[in-house]
Amino acid sequence: MDNERIINLSHGSGGSRTLKLIKEVFAGAFRTPQLLELDDAAVMDGETVFTTDSYVVRPIFYPGGDIGSLSIYGTVNDLVVMGARPLFVSSSFIIEEGFEIAALKKIALSMQDAAGRAGVSIVTGDTKVVERGNADGLYITTAGIGKLIVEPRPCRERIEAGNKIILTGYIADHGLAVILARGELNLTADIKSDAAPLTGLLLPHLDGSVRFMRDPTRGGVAMVLNEAVDGMDFGILIEEEAIPLRRESGSLCEILGFDPLYIGNEGKAVIFVSGDSAESLLEKLRQHPLGKESSIIGEVTEGRPGKVVMQTATGGLRIIDMPVGEQLPRIC
Image 1 (tube, one colour):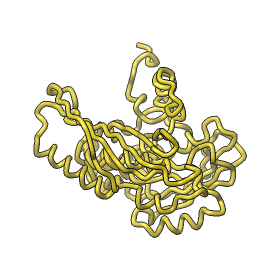
Image 2 (tube, rainbow, N blue to C red):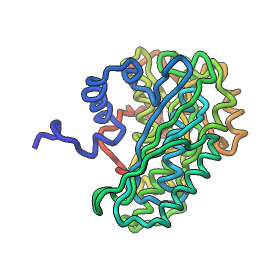
Image 3 (cartoon, rainbow, N blue to C red):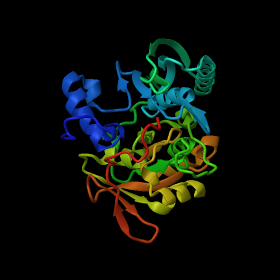
């Protein structure tokens, strides 16, 4: 059967096929101005920001988190990187027949704790139960509302040559923690999910010098950088040695043949900032517990428009393409 005529896992990877699916099916059908921006959230009336997301992580509990806290942090962070203060969240549950009520209570308490950390209130929701075998335990859909707190807001159109790119900490921890928790690889490593709210790390430092932000979830840092240059008249040059990566995570990626740039994170941000403000912002980020390992990983260049290039540790240059398939399915 023609793979271009059916949905497969690569359409959920957050990579090029996901983007194509969104453009050709959903944006093509709905055609609302906010949706056509293809942002992490929609700016509704000049100040209200609205986002939604679904969580299908497997397993539901993993080192450093669970599907409940992940659903709150993921939604909150999509608002924060738009330059908004998160306020309210809704949550809808699709529960498989046979799911333990004790586990559901644990997840609900985890969500409430995460909401408290993020400074939001869970104000409404919905519950559905489906037949055994039809939901892999539990799926959660959340939506979030926030208010813009900075003008002009961070957006792709404000990126320009000379901007520096900051990554707020170690990459790949979330995706690797989830895949290890599945117990399918016969490997062990001391790796926990990085899932956390970005409110305290980012909101106090937002001003006009911050040009663009994204949280590198599905598709990882590579996807964020490629989305930033897609169709633009600038390129990006990053340095491999500047990218924060735990030794344990790097070693595991080498064993499994994974590229950490393409692995999802749930508590990090990629920030494009004016060149003359980068060092000041970096110093502020490093004073926060979630930003201690922040690093300037590269810059926006006039050369190689539409391309992301990495200076490797050995001195060569490597093109970082937009991800196509799914290295680690069902991690968020």
